Image (cartoon, rainbow over all chains, first blue to last red):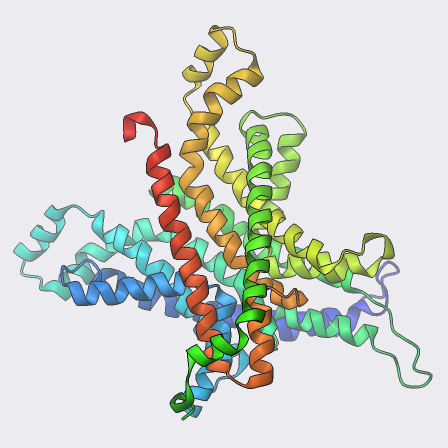
Length: 235
Length: 225
């Protein structure tokens, strides 16, 4: 790729930009997409199961929700990435996988709580009508209750996507090459002394982290607006 | 299988002095950030709700920027980004409380704005009709009612503020998470260190939300009690 030699853009920007856009950004988006899908699936299942009046499952899911929402995400990440492998070597994950698992634990807890409320908000007549039509528990929820509950779930789902995108940066802490990590490595590389005479490099932390903030803002601001719009229209 | 040697109690009793010092720092930064974000939320939330020119627009930009960028990048920017220039270099403790306060303040501005805007306009009109000044109306009418409406959401922000102090690990500010991380790096008691962190934060967050529930019912508006 040849970039236009614009006078205003310094020479060091090109490689940094390429690295962040072609390595960091795709990893961030991939982790966010997988974590969002898995959170939605697990969260909706757990949240629906929570509406059954059976104490043991309710207590278990309540525990799941309270634990993964209560612990700071970075601590969950340390548990998944550092502690889990020493319990069983099969639980050894790459940084990006560990990050995806962590964000799924957190995200599914959020969605489970939202789903519980959304399912509860569907009037009892809907359940009764579905039962009268011959639907069993699964069919009743899958075809009648959840499609209606989804309307209420849409705004929290979009907000969750924003939360997941912002929190993918935590993967930087364990060295996964997402957007912030590629930015951090670029800062380090530019600041490192260069071999011939070992002159110290330039620190570009202000410019690079500033650019990273702009990139995240451009990613999440439209989604935040969308969530607010959906909140107004659907709920 | 390392679980056979799992001993949370031994980990705690051997390192309690360091861990306690870290825990106190966590509480310290949390306390500063909670008070700070309360004040920011109060002033900017009021400015937003009353559409004070310039201040209101600047507050809106501040809120959107902070809410739509990762707090981790905000911490990096304050510590490493501003640290690039001698004039704006901040020490670790300043970045620690400042970054968490700025984050909490943005969320709280939004909480208080929504709370103040939920106060019916006729209440404020009644205050003004009684001869109160605009400022007196705010402190005697809007704040007591709107503040209570904003209470549940601002409490969630304070809980998030406490949890966010764990992120100060990235600038090596020696609060609880950094301390536990450093200990396990030496002793290899990885599972103990991180389960202890989980237990401590859960206890902190849960007791905070219980205490706050009690306060909430105590402060609830008379007609909703």
